[in-house]
Image (tube, rainbow, N blue to C red):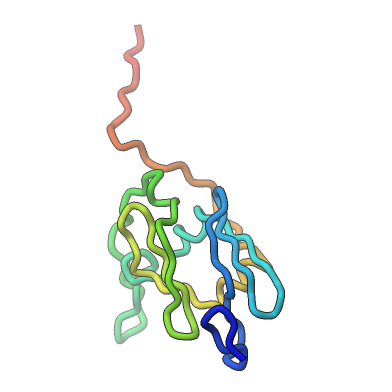
Amino acid sequence: MRAAGYDRRMGLLPIRVQPIGDELAIAWNDGAESYLKLADLRRLCPCAGCAGERDLLGRLMKPPARPLTAESFRVGGTAPVGGYALQIYWEDGHSDGLYLYTRLREWGDDPPELPPVNPAPLLPVKKELAR
């Protein structure tokens, strides 16, 4: 039996995904719900540009970190990828990461501990000169 476009025999699948405030809410086909912080999801983006990728010798190659703005933590949309991942379209235009359903469920059950982050200002901040 198919529900919301997914076949339950395929295993763990979301039946509903919706951004709510600063979280991404996911209702799973087994009845569980996950609430994931958008800032954490963005910082844990699994794409090669964000997380890096390993070369043939196993060395992690990672480009310089891109500056994050307030738009970097807002979801413009989501789309399922096959029966295994969710693609998140961030409002700053980034959408390369494919978030595995199993990983999203793990993070929902046991949220990752990340240091706090503040979005970088769009313009440099001038420090006041000492008088």
